[in-house]
Image 1 (cartoon, each protein chain N blue to C red):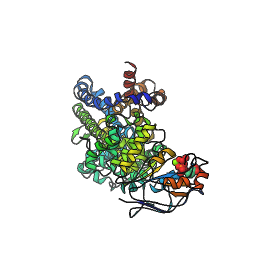
Image 2 (cartoon, each protein chain N blue to C red; image 1 turned 90 degrees about the vertical axis):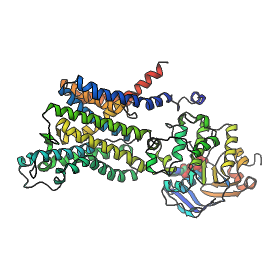
Image 3 (tube, each protein chain N blue to C red; image 1 turned 180 degrees about the horizontal axis):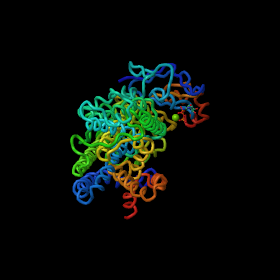
Image 4 (tube, chains in turn green, blue; image 1 turned 30 degrees about the horizontal axis):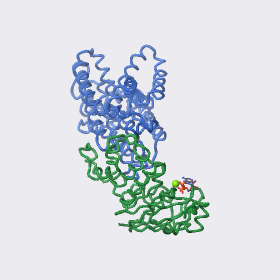
Length: 245
Length: 361
Ligand SMILES: Nc1ncnc2c1ncn2[C@@H]1O[C@H](COP(=O)(O)OP(=O)(O)OP(=O)(O)O)[C@@H](O)[C@H]1O
Ligand SMILES: [Mg+2]
């Protein structure tokens, strides 16, 4: 298993520093929560790591430098992400979505043929994300929470080693949140997970470590208890952190 | 299926359409084959049958557009280029074959500007070069162009405009080179097609059968591509290119395959158009015909296998019939048709069936 090491990461949009010199280490197998107020630069950080926006500094996953590579190459190096608004292929079935996610390494010859059976990784992922019954349903017809799970399932079959999840439980019911949290536990057994989240209850239940971003910089870092006790964090969250700390 | 009820907006009842897409073409193809090979040759006069051959050539272009645009989201508004390359490659060979060994084509002697055959004409004397070239040349051009364009992430309207510009450029180039390309007149007055006299109605029927068989072959290829894993990937790229990238694919390559295949299909269509219709000229490959190819596909239903073919034949037939009666009105009528389809029936005629079926129960 590999960890993530970010050094002096900077992203600016027309002079506006969205990420402003971030250092971040995530140990292999960790479940790191990345929190912070709106506009803190959380999504931008993930965008930079996955090659979507240009950034300076360095990002290592294992021994490999990620910065400067095109998106699809970073993905092939085992880095996968979800998006703030679930993006699945709505016109394709759940099975087709997963099959595509599993197939980046397929030969041209096998691409040109029909899928004759369900790959084992795909049926396993269907079980893991609890969508076996919806296998042949169009992804566009899934409930919101199910789409989020499908996205996570796509990362599983893609066999990524680093998962970057952008607000995976936004809009989910309580039960769905708990199921997602349990899923994170399973997933992190042999993978490194970074979760962006606003939901503090969810964070308290499932985070192993937490990093707080604010205005493009790291404000605080540590265990859930350490971060919640940090006065700087309490200040930024205007009492949210103190509510039940 | 409870979730369908929960989210009615993002959850159109697409399940029936899927079944239609998967089951339809198998039956549709068989019915189409019977119509093309058994019914049409018996029912139609020689004249009508050769008109149908012309429409079927246009339908071959449409199959490729259905793949690249309908499935891949590439608005290929410049297929005239590939149609033209295939057509001119075939026409050059037929001109040289008519002229006989060592001779120059009649029009070159007529214009009298040249002493010898231009070097780039020479290879087309050989059928072993010319025939493959009708398909491979368009594919090569599409490959080079697509490699440049898709990697730079040129999409949507920009891609469409670029395609149009290319079609215009090729037409203008051909017009300018009258001495070597026949200029505005193009290449015409063919006598033979691989040794068969084209004035003989029997041979015209043979050309019809070649066209019909080629169209069926292209449909089978498109069907295999659509149903393959590649076909699913192509739809994924159409709907969310960025997402596909994050799964480790390079969408540029996925699009390139569809674009190159569509170009090859247009090339073959152009090549067969020449013996079927007896002419190829710049007016058949420029901006206007390029748009007309797409209109037929839009009318028929771009995302289905048979929709583009039916749309292309219907529009081409309407054009012949109506432009005889109201020559001036046709252009407007065609524009109106396109707008109506885009506004009210974005899935084309193929989706009308689904709409009807949806209302009936
Ligand atoms: N493409 C862009 N162009 C210009 N500014 C941008 C761009 N993307 C993000 N920003 C700005 O960068 C800052 C950080 O945005 P980012 O989306 O990373 O925040 P976030 O921490 O994910 O917030 P949220 O919790 O609301 O999702 C914001 O001020 C945002 O307006
Ligand atoms: Mg965000």
